[in-house]
Length: 345
Ligand code: NAP
Ligand code: GDD
Image (cartoon, rainbow, N blue to C red):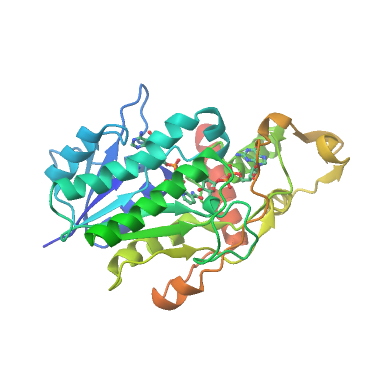
């Protein structure tokens, strides 16, 4: 019998990569999408077929803020594995919509876990919770499973609730539930307002189309960036392990936002130079100012330095990433150029 997976957050970056990975593993994949006024399924359109045809991929309307929909979907699908990737996942935006962020990103997890109990399937289903390095926040790197949590945003705090409610339901009700504590992971499918994709899109537009200028915030934040393709494999591996445990997933290397910009320029074969300091720091290309700082992109409290130690996952799950920072940048830039070329045909 084919295994059935249910993914909350199917329309996001990780949802798309995970669905494609599980379909290749011969799963039947069900995804929960929320209603929106314009189409939000672009990332999975390539695997979606008319449900009247033979397919292993299905979409259902639902919302993590709506307990009834969560319960009904789980009851209908009876999945073997549930992946909770659904979240208001933007750290900066979480300062603008803290209550909504808590509702989706914290209570959404409780709604799934409690539906599992209500339906009495706690011995049948495995649960993955998308935790984050943002929970470490102000704690010094390198961060691992034993590092103290010190979140610095409403998003990080909501995720910390999800982390502990997952641990609690595992201990109290014996649910096979795992927290993946994933460090930043990117890809050509990354949301356009996260810094890596914003930089790649912005610089491709400037260099290939001669258009626009990029406004950024803190150039000196350090992040541990990996590729989403590698990270979704770790999610699946956690649910195939003998025991349900929590794992840090990371590359173990960190770079500043400014260094990421330099790598993108290198990949595009362009030389830029930097002038000025603080809010007046600027980047130039052929004397043209192409990057400036805008303080609106600074956060009220910043996470300055993230770098994970994922040796537990590498040893116990035999997880090894294929990508490094350069192959990530290459993949993102290549796909962006392909997109621009397609648009101009
Ligand atoms: P993403 O692209 O922002 O995707 C988030 C998904 O959640 C989208 O499908 C979104 O739907 C859905 N969603 C939002 N609100 C919802 C609601 N009320 N009900 C149901 N679904 C809802 O995020 P991602 O980068 O793929 O990340 C996946 C998960 O991992 C998230 O939980 C994120 O917080 C966590 N995480 C990400 C990273 C990273 O670096 N990418 C690192 C650590 C943890 P729409 O498409 O309709 O908006
Ligand atoms: N988004 C954004 N936009 N960030 C900027 C900008 C800008 O214009 N300029 C500088 N930054 C800095 C942010 O202040 C932050 O320090 C860093 O770039 C990365 O920002 P994001 O790409 O928005 O990611 P994040 O690290 O805040 O959060 C992402 O990773 C988390 C894992 O650590 C998200 O995917 C979260 O959902 C995830 O949990």
